[in-house]
Length: 298
Image 1 (cartoon, one colour):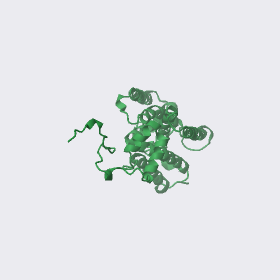
Image 2 (tube, one colour; image 1 turned 135 degrees about the vertical axis):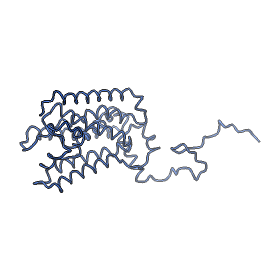
Image 3 (cartoon, one colour; image 1 turned 90 degrees about the vertical axis):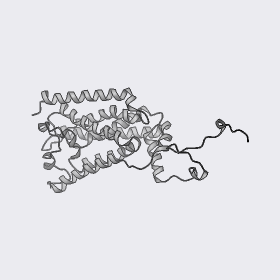
Image 4 (cartoon, helix red, strand yellow; image 1 turned 180 degrees about the horizontal axis):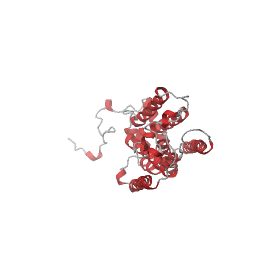
């Protein structure tokens, strides 16, 4: 019998888990049309990843488990809104008033010693327009991000934006209350925006221009309304801070960018990760000391 040179043999193909296909029946059907999940994942990869990473993402991705974090957070925010709109009836439920300002979840400067309020304010929204805008943005952007980067990374960025938003508000607008998930939403936007800018050449150029323009228009419009509500609108009640938007987007453009640009890489070996973590911890410590010793709020 002739000797067989193993090195010259064609290697058996393997699936994404490293298992070999031994027979032709086990081979993937290259002529098979992709299903709904596969087409959706292909679209997600085009929007979220540079070209050199798409095939690796598509080779190991699936729709299970679904993006749990963003869905659960959105359900929680909607449930709290319905509670204060229905079970805590207002004069009008389109724009909530008394109920949310008495809520133990709302951030209020005179109750800042109740530390949970620096995060729990994200569940409370001031009206239909407020919650619909936040839910739409975090679902449209958060679900694709979580499919690519998974729930832990997206959750860390989202919560970092929420906390950064309330702490920034307590420093730069210390007499104003705070409601809404804008800090978390803007963290997702900031991380995605920086990733789109840095990887612009590797992504589809036309889509790159389009998404950057869309982000600039949405952020600019929202900031304009936030400034108007804070300084120009003569509404009774507590003044609502807009600084959380700034805190959230800065957190997203730093921590979010590191998380979302490190696809398939080990974060603990990335010096940018540690630089952002150290800077964030320093900011949190400064904000805590400011609120204890220097804040002009009552």
